[in-house]
Amino acid sequence: MDEVLEVVDVVADSGFEGIVTWLLRLVGLVLLLAGLGMWLFTEMGLLLVPALLVLAGLVLLVAPSVLLLAAEFA
Image (cartoon, rainbow, N blue to C red; front, side):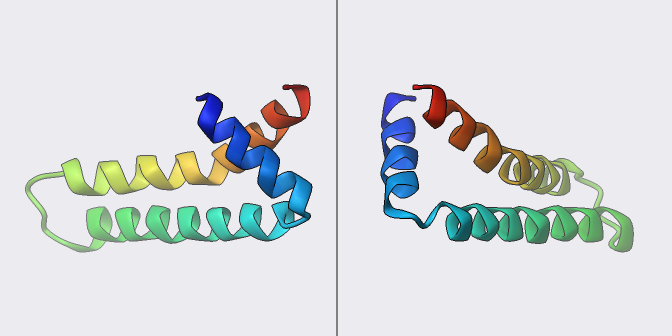
């Protein structure tokens, strides 16, 4: 976890935190929509892959804000 906070701190110091945050949110939104699309519009018997995509998408939507907040306090 310390390595992740160090990377986030370097990104925040370089001034690219807005770009990186929105890029991660965009990837998270794409994963979320892909997981929902696979679950709703296909006849997949195994729901593990769509569930993992939705979970990863939600994590990527929330994680940048939480990591930048944690980097400010560290």
